[in-house]
Length: 210
Image 1 (cartoon, rainbow, N blue to C red):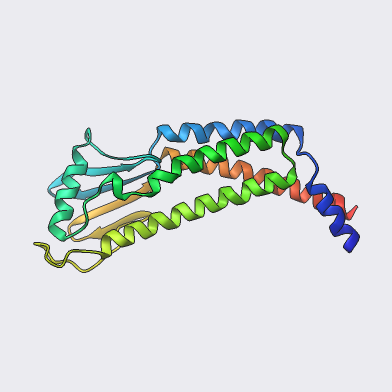
Image 2 (cartoon, rainbow, N blue to C red):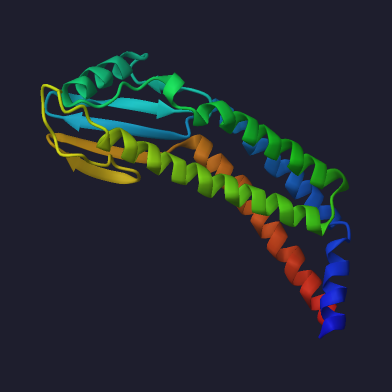
């Protein structure tokens, strides 16, 4: 038993397979492209807004639909219900997410060039942590905006949590929240990294038992 465990840890220090280096290097490309696409979009539909209002969240900024006009309209509506104004400066996650994505790109290229199985495992853990932490922060942000309402607002509403994923009815607005291209690209990278890691760990485990 102990010999098998020692053998397994020894195999973790072996270089990763040559073909997986190519896969890992190519998987870094979607991460770079993710800066050009929105991570998430929130749309609001109501009888007075039949075409809807849209908010796009990028890794580095937020933008309103219809050439930015929707953001001002959304902030006007939020003012009436006492919700805090949506401003890029308040989205502090947008200050570190670009650096986190850039770090994952550099780490993936390093592992592809000179990495071993152990460094691939570290990359997979960091990737999963980044994804889970970002999702949790996004949910917390929406909760905070919907629950910290100004009691002096012209329209009084019960605290609420906007739709995190899917569609939710709030007053006369149907709010839809869904991932966009950048999230898909990051998910592709994460799937490739986790898949490669699982393959190398299973391969190492089989060799350790042999």
